[in-house]
Image 1 (cartoon, rainbow, N blue to C red):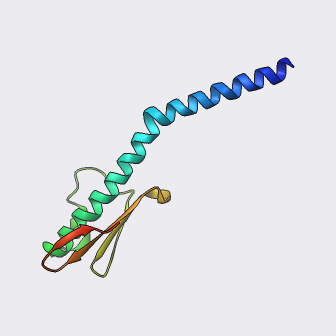
Image 2: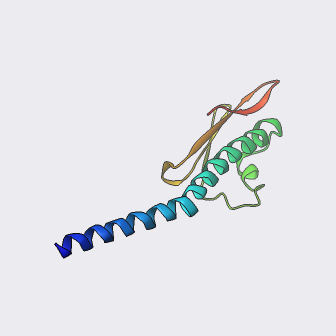
Image 3: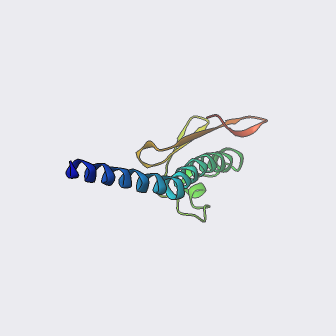
Length: 103
């Protein structure tokens, strides 16, 4: 009976620790990843289609390290994806309107 009680207390403490990690760290990191992918897609789209620069030079404009993001061009659309697919965003260029997020 003491073993079961000890396991339940241990499991409860583990769940509490996991909840605290999620609340104070992981939730913020996931929000940052979503913002980073959307911002990257929009900025690279504008750089690529409005400024008419090459994709590689557009990626060098960022002051933060975006090397972990996968940025690809498909027609008049730029997509940015975080590692392991945690977040992705796409921006599309429309003549006369510019670039806008589509997802």
